Length: 309
Image (cartoon, rainbow, N blue to C red):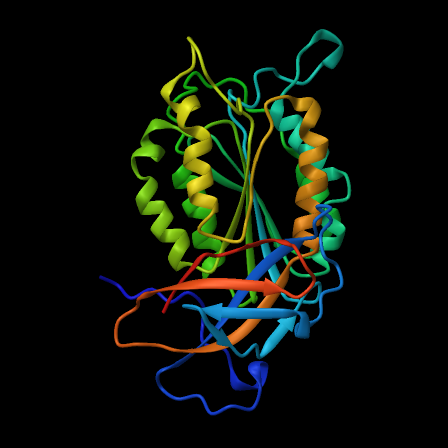
């Protein structure tokens, strides 16, 4: 089996003046945290954070927040499931999910992100298409969004390969040099083929240094007659994927709640922290339990539960 590395080896000058042997590996780990009032920490200091691997304390050699170099990929499902009409006409009850996603992204999402690094926009139905390649120009990103047209003419609403599109996004991010890599996926619901390969994509995300956020437009609790297998398994599927990373899963059954999704998403992306540290890599990669503690009382911390090195 091919040996996967969670992150590229960090140069000693980034993590401090330590001797780096052949079996010493540098790793970046990102997390977000909220206080007991569900407010994201914006001013954490290195001395307030403790890192443990396999229940053993680890020395933090790098600590960063808003100035951490980051690459973002936003991937939007533009299909008959998210674009039922040629255009949205709310006064007639014609509302395209994809239009609401575009409107939400146009509401000040990109300016703070491009200050951290380049952003890519892509859309998909049956195929994956880059709308705007990686750029730090928020005008180009907004112009690309404005030019997107609802893809409402397709006939197939079931066999949309969501996991394969997520995998394409991971491929675009994983080998980039930025210390933090973020993928944000907007989709309707998981497809049956993707569900069959859940474990394969869980392992992909466990091995790659890409943090995944998913916004799904589906029922939160699909019970009763008339719900498909995909609808019933949607939350289970995406939660199992996202929890392998420091990302988050959002589900927005009603378009009226999408503003709340964007508020929280923007806060998480803007108020994440990244740690850098060394580990002693073995002959074969093995799993190691991760724990982060914050010395400010009760906190809700989101981070990868497992590292492989």
